[in-house]
Image 1 (cartoon, rainbow, N blue to C red):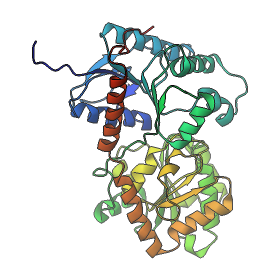
Image 2 (cartoon, rainbow, N blue to C red):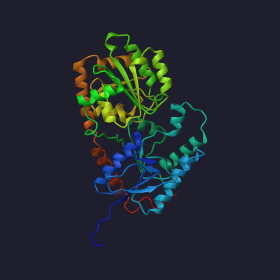
Image 3 (cartoon, helix red, strand yellow):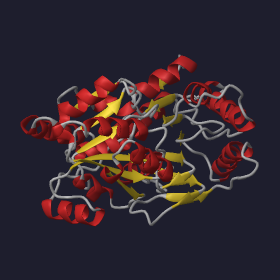
Image 4 (cartoon, rainbow, N blue to C red):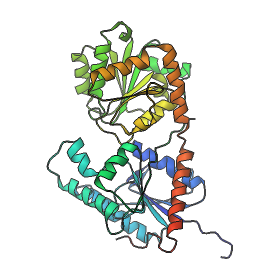
Length: 393
C-alpha cells in the first residue's frame, strides 16, 4: 500500500527470554526498549519466555533435544535456523547464543575452548564441548560470519579476539544497562524490615555476595577474608549475606570451620533483589571468571561500593578507591586492603556510595538500546541489497 513504511525486520535469538539469569535479563531489557522505539519489527525466537511483554514483539517457540546433552546446542541452532526461514525474510539476525549464522552476536560468553580448558581446567573436550566449539566457529568465522560482535566487557572482548581476530567485523563493547529507578539507594524502613526478616541487626555491616555458582564466584575467598576481619576490632560487626544458589551445605561447613558460622546468612534465590541491595553495605564478587556480572551494576545503582576480582568483566565500571576496588582474587593482602578501604572510614564510604550511584546512572537501558539501534542502522545501511536471513542453513 502506498505510503506505508516497512520497518526492518529483526530476529532476536535466545534460549530463554525473561527468565532468571544475567544474560536473560540483558536480552529482555534491551529487546523491550528496542521495541518501544517502534523503529524495528522485532521477532523473538526462544525455547521459553516468561510473562506478558509490554512491547510489540512477536514470539516464535524453538524446540530443543535435551538428551543426549551434545545434541542440545545443535538442535537449538537448527531449530532457530528453520524457524527464522519459516517466518520470512529478516533484515538482521541478532543472536544471544551460538547459532548457525547471525549478523550480530551479543557476546555474553567467552570462546568455549578457552572456557573449558582455562577456566574449568578440562583437558579432554566432551561431545557437548566439541559441538559448542563447532557452532561458535561457524557463527563467528564461518562462510558467512557475524558482521558485528558486541562483547559485554573489555575482558570478554580480549578473550574473543585471542581466539577469533574477526578482521572484517565490527567489534564494540556494549555493557549491560541497569534500571536506576528500580535499583535505588537505601530506604531506611525497607532496609530495617528486611534485615529483621533475615536475622541481621540494624548496626551490622553487611557484605553482599550474589551468585548462582558459589564456587566459581569466590565465596570461599570472601569467607576466608571475613574470618581475618573478625580478628580485628573493626571487623566484629561484619556479616555476610549470601544470595543465590550453590552448594550451601559445603559453605556453611566452611564458615563453621573458619569460626564465622554465626556471621553468615544464606538467603537462597530471591526475587526482591532491589530490597536485598538496600539491606547491604558492600558487594564483593571474587569470581574466577565472569564476562560481566550484572549484580555489580545493580549494587552500584543501589549506592553500594563494590570489590571485584580482575577476572570480573564489570571491572570496567570500577574507579579505584572512588566507587570500589579491583583486586587479584588470590592476593589476601589486596583483598583485605580493599575491604578496609571501603569500610574503614565513614566519610570515605559515603563518598564511594555517591560515586557508585553516579556510575550506574550512566548505564541506563535506554542508552544501551540507543547504541544497539545505531549498530542495526549501520549494518542495514552497509548492505541494503544483501539483507541476511535469506539463507539460514
